[in-house]
Length: 77
Length: 401
Image (cartoon, rainbow over all chains, first blue to last red; front, side):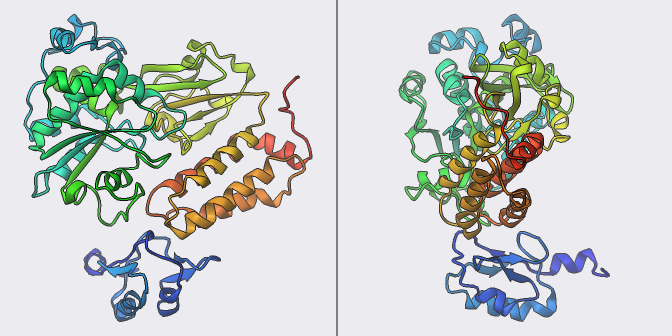
């Protein structure tokens, strides 16, 4: 809660291309802090945001998740 | 400027449909040529007028203009006459009645934005012949394109994709068409009704525009009436009472179980909501919007849950098959409503509709799952009494015969 607006703006978002996503599920495995899977295996953003803000300490994991997506449906932006 | 509008008899609600547009000569004789307006001036008057897009989303037109105007490359402007909404007939009617007004709007934007290309995209149900003749008569450089695509064909990014000779399906919204659209250029997609409003706004100004409608939702709009009343397309002021519209079209209010407003992504309004004002603020209380201007009156002898289930089944088939939550969730939602449409339905199905809505909303590239889920939910809200009948094993909407 103590996060300033400046910090929030400086943090990247995990952009999910829903048209590419095929429900492989590796993203939620690598980034369970931000992502869950629905019953069909597609990612659900835990915060309810469309593209979740990635806190600093999760950035390396988020990059790994993006790199691991076999359909290139994730990127940080 | 307003005096001129008064001389032309444009002081009432009949603006777009009053244009004498049977030939270019008549159009120019009555309205004169559309003035050239610089982009900053056009944005300014559009903002003052409070004009919003009439295609369905209701986005402020000035903001769209600004976004495309900020691009570095010369943009492409697309007039959208795809009219993918099953119950809508207003774009077809407008193009048949006032083609030059629509083309004026397209040329006005083209000049203001120094556009590279002007395109008019017409959907499957629209005969583009008359508008092609109108383009030839004007010697205008407007590319009229006959397009395909069902319910989602007119979705902005799906239309742009098709114009780029790719599949007519919605694209990832992280690359918006205003940044990268037709031919990779910044692209402005504007509904044809909005274009016609712009053509009159450029002539008569925002003061005139605001003489109809409400202060927070000004102007007029086109509605397509269908169902248990006299069907047809009408131009009415924003803020008009729904009940007055229904009465004017000969509907017997006591025989209606509800009105579908907006379209298949719209909202069912129950009889106690019939006196709502058709403006953004009036409808906010019901979570409804005028959308593409569809007003469908449902006769009380038809089961509203059956009608709604069939619409959601149609919507499930209209998915572009790209996003998992839509591919999987929409057929599930349709099936849940179909089961609710049978008397003696399992009471847990009501909670299942709400659960599925939460599951598919905000998880697609376009608004199709969100809009469809909202529609499904509105059926349960507006017809809650009827849901209770079904759960109790009854349905009192059976036709008399």
